[in-house]
Length: 615
Ligand code: G6P
Image (tube, rainbow, N blue to C red):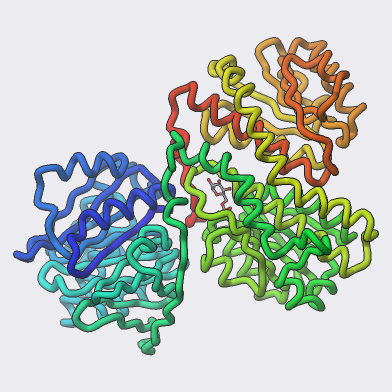
């Protein structure tokens, strides 16, 4: 978490930094700050508790001039969110300013050593240790900034992406990276950008360099871009092209990114299937499978690793892979899997699902499984992200940047890729009849259209959500493919409306949750005709008998549940495996409108961050 930005060149850095920080706010918004060096070599640091708009207010009428600067938006780990703990942090000498994303694990030891050398610390952060350490190394060994960073970072354990500027030498920014993302943008006029992801950079240049772990770089309009690794080996920069539709980084008339991204789904799912699902031949092709057929088909066991919403998509993946391909599949929380003793070898296929491609636990799980010989397939959204780069192969979901912290279009994109993957593998393995395969492909091609139609339910959900503004708890239930949908619906509500919500397999209700049901408990239940309908209807009766308020997602034309439930929302008749793509939409909208009714910050819910780069 935390986002870092930087600029050096001929433009005024401040506006580049502010715009960049706003784009990175999804990574954390506990505090924000910038450091700039003006033409008189004054180092001006402005920082506030709160968001980037608060920072802009704070810097009004202050000297924000300078063509070099760094900025930070924080998700607090060490030290509460306040101005002192906000980045940039300054060295005791007043010479260096530094921003950091990550966690320094040996900061207590380093801090004690530096204190014994006379360094005093102002903040409670692990980051301040870095800036003092670099300052110390510069002084002690009479080194310039980049060589000092190379020496200092060799002593540091943990994860970091840092950017440092030096008051007396406003001609360079030095950056370093290990386990936290850092992208350098190479502009046309000897200017350089840096950021935690490419979104702050793309409107200035499409040329980027993804710094690798253990690399330190100096960006200077005079001497260019120099990269060295911690073994002092010079690395020639590998410039890549990024293209991003900048419109996707704006709200485009929607009040929130989340709503825009919910409405974006028909288009983005079309993008996700483009070139992969052939409407004429009804064939599905994934280049990753074509290129690695043998290894994928030989997998005796699949383990899906992911966190949060991506883990819910994984639960759908398990059902698809077992049903279509007959391969035993487990779904593990990445954070648990990496410390488990699950036997892994070359016969195991690990599928890592991550929107951001940067989630620390998922990345670590990938690295662990790879070392043990498993073949790793990534399903990511962010192009060029760490997980995408550390897997053996994979498929991007291609849904465009997702900015709202609560994941929406990425979930449906992940499910779409998993459906395509299961279909391709089933075809190759011969575990599915051509008839069933074609039936699903035909329906899959109709999904964007069906999503568009489903969005009309917004008219029904908006007024309905008002009734739930004061609810304290919600239960979500489903079975089969409906169970992960229930979990995802509950997570959406929790994340943005702060209402306690739990997802349960409907049949488990009798083993505990039924005790919670009274006339104040709303129960959302996926009761489509395909998901063990009769049994779910019995569950609904049991809730009704205890006066629970039932919101049921039903198949169009349903009359049975309609007579029992307080509210019914209809979805079209679909093969069960495709239902999650449609049934999720009303649940996303319900969470959205409840949060809006409560007057909450939908795109930036408290305590959360979109990209969790700490373990
Ligand atoms: C955070 C986000 C969630 C996301 C999860 C996994 O918790 O707030 O929306 O599902 O991380 O992120 P990933 O980028 O790996 O999918």
